[in-house]
Length: 110
View 1 (cartoon, rainbow, N blue to C red):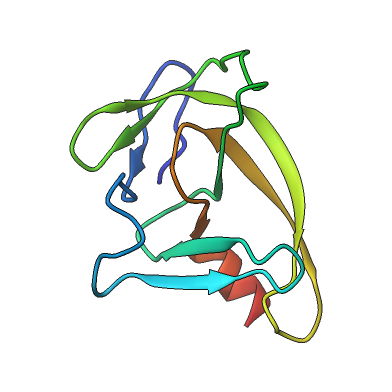
View 2 (spheres, helix red, strand yellow):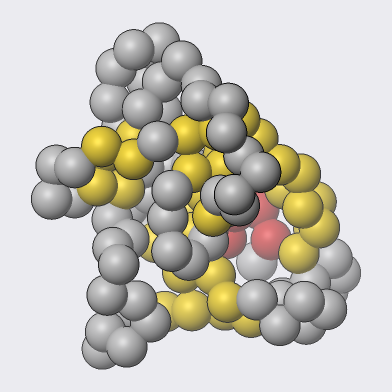
């Protein structure tokens, strides 16, 4: 995903057909057992919104098919992906079905 200036669009490659799509890489947090899609074309980490997340933000994301994805701020998570240690990371909260880890996360942690 690409985050651009206010009121512009960004691209998200995840879609609602997850996780049974061959060729997609998922990692699982050891503590929460939550699966994260690893998206090498993404420039943002995105976490799925919950019903309590109702305040939208000033920017939008766009899915690869062109549909708009609403965003609701940020959440800070600590991920334990069986690497050397747990990693704190900031995610954009958005209307996605699975959390997405972007390319920068893997370059900082591996």
